[in-house]
Structure formats: structure tokens, C-alpha cells
Length: 91
Image (cartoon, rainbow, N blue to C red; front, side, top):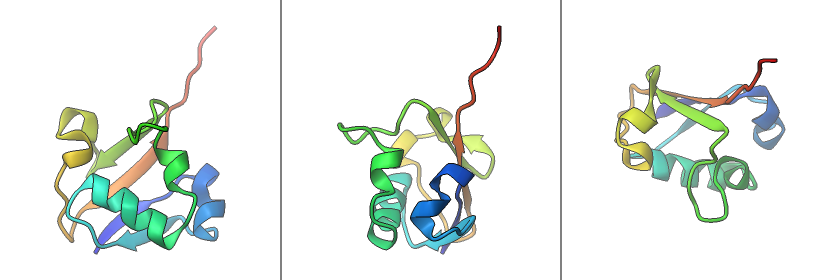
């Protein structure tokens, strides 16, 4: 099982859990598995075209999946995925 860290804004979808486990072979399957277990979470992760929302960063073992294979990034049982909302700031 792959561990997925859930950010605070999405925890209402996971019953308050900060970390969940899913069985998936890649990021795309992970999102589908999350949706099966926690209905409504996919629309918070993906836009209407099915792409990961621009304001979300997803890290596999602390590496941004955008620099790997995106939604096709393979997962192993020992992996940890972190979903991080992007934070904008400045003056």
C-alpha cells in the first residue's frame, strides 16, 4: 500500500485523516482509488478535463511528479505521496 499524506483543506473528505493508504500502480490510479474510498475528493484534485489542478503539487517521496512522469508516475508499496496545496504570496 502507498501512503498518501492529505492536506488540511482536504481532510473533511477523508473523515479527518491526515494520512491514508491506497493500492495503486501510478498517480492516476491513486487518484481513482482515493475517489472510490473518499467520494468527492477527485474533483478537489483534478479539473474538469481530468488533469491535476494547477494549484496542487503532488510529491512522490519528496520529488514533484511534474518532473517525473506526471499522472503516469509509477508507485511502489513503499512510496509516500504528499498532496500539497500551492501557496501564493508576495506584495
